[in-house]
Image (cartoon, rainbow, N blue to C red; front, side):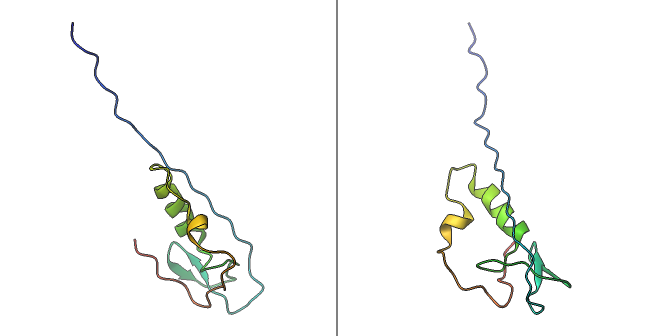
Length: 86
């Protein structure tokens, strides 16, 4: 009798990140590594919610850490966007 086909181990990552808007008029809005005009977001780093959510989603399937656990808290906010490699 033939053995049933094996089903590959599929893992899916899901990530989310939220940041409040900043009252600092000089803080840039960074989403996905792109700088936009308008109010920036408050965070320990560049507050790039898109980059952080994607990073968490990538770290999820192998059951790794999250971006929040990899960054020490408290950390001084960065005055400029931190480069995000795509």
